[in-house]
Picture (cartoon, helix red, strand yellow):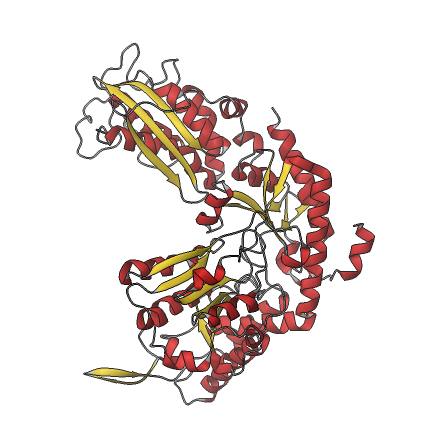
Length: 415
Length: 177
């Protein structure tokens, strides 16, 4: 693919991200670590700043007008996020600290109430630790059995034995988009398979929601976890979408203020959903920022974000292959329809730490490490990879800068 | 930012490309410990054969970046043939160079050897040189000084110390049966 053919699908929003104007050594920053966390547009920064300056107050518990305004902003953020993922009702969105807490909420609150010794939870071999460790904790406490969906050689889920794995399972919890391989999984198909087996379908959509249209009703899932900081919003706030009847039936996770209707000497009565799951003072300013991030992304259109990233990813796969051939091994599917702009790679047998260090000398920011997916690393036969990840503010020049920096890394360590 | 050449000194690249004392030792008589760098998932195994209070042989296996591998390689050369006291003193000096841990005691003192729990024990008399002259070539740490630049790259300090911490664990480990 030529650059000329690609550019018609590219969007240009870099200028709206103040941090991306930062320079090191008087050279521009090349931020390729958005699968880790994303940068924030001006509108999100302004929204949080203005809210803090004019409207900040406790929510849900005071009669004065300022507090009512703050509560409106917080609940308005819930409605924005619900709309963004096509939830039926705003109260199906629970604000959490991040996607990790959302998944812990499912495993601990729903899981501890519903899973018993010998019950089966099915996960996949490409999960983030956030969708593994809470189930390990539950397995240790409850004696549940974990089963793992294997992968194909090109980094997609191997679904040939799925029905057997799901046989008798109570939960199927899986990623919608691998944070290492970039693989986009067939969520609706997996949800249907889970439901056919009588299992709950839990989707880790932390990497999916920021990068393309997400429709929780279309997925027909039971729980969906995601977080604000990967989608241009602030860190410190995430979300769990759950079916209303499931959330109603799930006991509270954390106990404290805000999550109760009544507390007596002999016990307590939890508040209705979603307050039931939001113990203590929540991230209020962050909720204002989360809503602004949703507005920002809706303004661009998630179809456009996805098309931009497909174009850039295709360009990256093609040009890195052309430039480096066998010197680079990029993990994950080659089919652009099945992958996002997450490029984990091995280069010249160099250790990822060394690659990222050399790249940093050219201001190219990539992650080096196990990406919180050690079982997947073992499957790939590596201890770590370098990972460049693309987002809506990246452009052709960023991909070219990555290639140029890799060239220099190869030269630097050349024998 | 500090230049890459501050980090990747030529001697480091040399040890990375041609690591010394790679491999395994039979256990027993050697002891071993496995060290992990949780940041990157790197794993090294250090085998150490201690005879009469002296490191008779040492080998390292596992994977890692140029900093962890070269540090491990230089470490094996530096500690082979040294007494455990000398090795512990060297570990303290090395970590001190990287601005972590307690600074080592002054060279001339010889009274700290039995300090309770002190990692920074010093040897009163090392063969063939004054106390603290652990590299034996007149400088404090010899080739290991090349790793001094790592201190300017704080994320990489754990890479440089991985093999050293694992060596200390291996020395303290029980001899496998």
